[in-house]
Length: 228
Image (cartoon, rainbow, N blue to C red; front, side):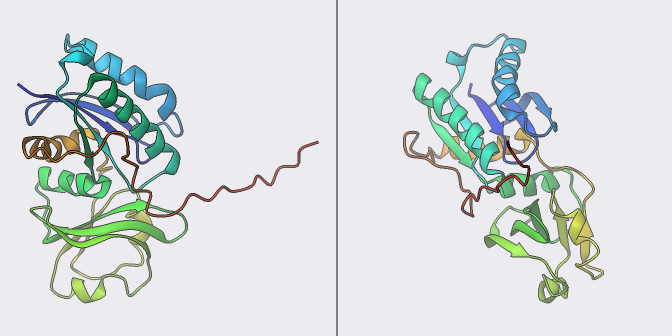
């Protein structure tokens, strides 16, 4: 049997899942902001202990590769790489947006295409388009949403918008074929089947050189507070 540990830290959600073959057997997660560094290691230890497993029982580690929070991705990927390197097991990278789209497939919602969205300040979102089979129709992009966004596609396709970036777009993207999910759609459990498929295909990344898919360069914002 194949045990895979799954790590999702691309947004405010810190989520860890454990799977046996292609089935989720345990999940621990929190939406508490900026607490990934404190929670991730604890969750991994707890989830393995609850299943009476040791790290050495793992066959692979999968990690959400982005796009998303620079800090969150760095913490998740660093942890995943450390485990994979230390145990000499494969590292599997999963698109954060594609895993979000898979949550819609699990929930069997009514749509033709899926547009997972991650909030990226103001009216910008990180997004892609997939079909029901998770085939990528439009690659990941940083999109500034306005009243013209997706309108040509919505004329013929029913699009399900979901994720942390979807709520702020609801009043801008109009049309009878625009559907907005109220679910969070972010969880390490959504990575399981995608990761198991890659494991079977031996589609791994280089543990030493793998880097998160930030999409945009990190820009540090100077504090406006005065220091004396």
